[in-house]
Image (cartoon, rainbow, N blue to C red; front, side):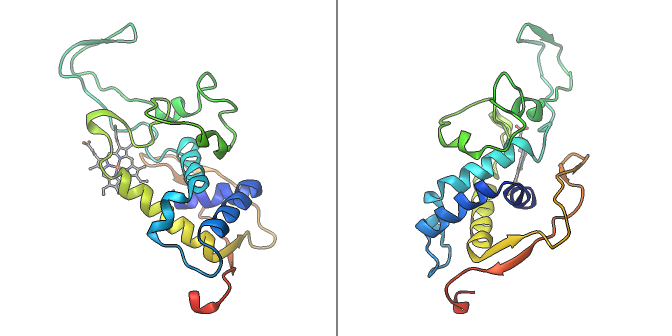
Length: 189
Ligand code: HEM
């Protein structure tokens, strides 16, 4: 997820500038990122959610298997059926999202509460118990990498966002970026 988020930010310089502006305001270039800053990094959180929307790590979640025959959305699902829930299809459904294939983190600045069109960690009894740990770790590492360095593609290379098929969807080719220090003093590193 770290790689996808960095790739999307490099591809969308407007979003990258907004992240830097927020980090300058909340953390400042004379300080390092601390856990206490994380709740105030709302734009970075929107960037992370938008990345989870377009690149859900487990696009088919974990299969379900009803213990009793049940009715859902007008369909009968017999007991024992293996049911896959396609989170990627939900995340990119044009009836649920405006410009679903475009990377627009601002859309998450106004979404609140539970919302079943966005399920990167699943839902219900089998929801991912690691969600708070995963999101906070991702936010902390991203905030630190971005706050400490400017990131650019190596000269002469181009960004691509091709993915590799699997249970967990990863980038086909590793992302290679060049960091340049941006903090006020080398002692902060
Ligand atoms: C970016 C990081 C992560 C993503 C995107 C992710 C996503 C998911 C998803 C989609 C499911 C299936 C939920 C469902 O079908 O409703 C799941 C299940 C699970 N996840 Fe995560 N997860 C992440 C990190 C973690 C971490 C850090 C832990 C543990 C520390 C963890 C532990 C688990 C466990 C134990 C389950 C199975 C829950 C069950 O079946 O009852 N995950 N995760």
